[in-house]
Length: 302
Image 1: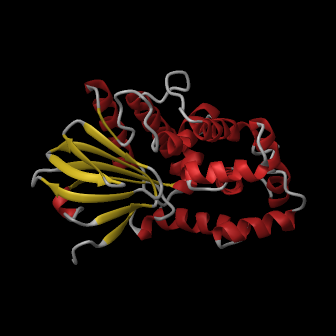
Image 2: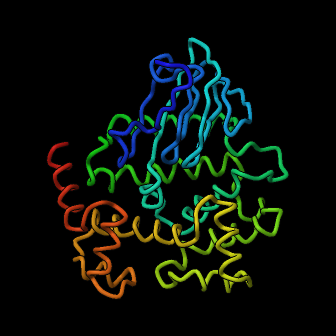
Image 3: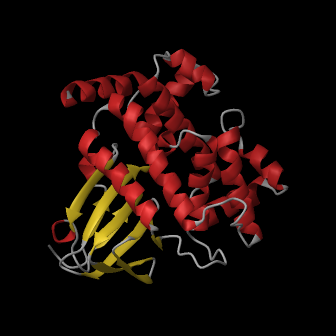
């Protein structure tokens, strides 16, 4: 494989599923290559050492360390020991909010893109941290369940088992790196605006899908507010709102028997045709096709 190749994580064939596995890194990683995180990616190091960088910042990981990568992070692998072993969790961005089933969990998740890019003023690397012994054991136990009992293509198992386990795993990570809305606060005015937007979004996006509402809460113009959110999080506020609407629509189609009309009304669309066009534009298929695809995947996996 050529030096400097850029790989996607998770692998393209697993682009719309939660993926968990353990591996000897000689079979998974290539030194000097780069890895583009398509979603939320967790590496728990269970043995050996690795030298890597994210956005040019060099880091050294070893056993009992965990590495977390946000969507669109580019990770370069410089070197690793022959005995490096990791447990890997890949959760596509479109599915993570579905896995986060409480508003508090969603708020913590949505503020990570802000916190990962800033100096939070404490001795914490937001991409890389050492695990306490109990946290290590807890993560190992969750990994074991995910790897042994959760096939990636089954929506029923995903709903009943994978989602609570992913949420539990992320809450352990939040605790380990000190993600507390009381303990960590953004420093600059722009960071505060973005941080507060991410906190309020899970509570308000169903009733308020106009950026004007959020700009007014921040006491700034829509133009300035949009520029701030895009600068700090790399995504526009409209795109954040649409991502949550898409995620919620997928969740309702997966996990409930609600009709397209009922889902359209619950999500605040003016009519079912408007919702169908929105969903197809975001996912490449209609709500009906999406639900049929999940049923087909379930039948194939069983």
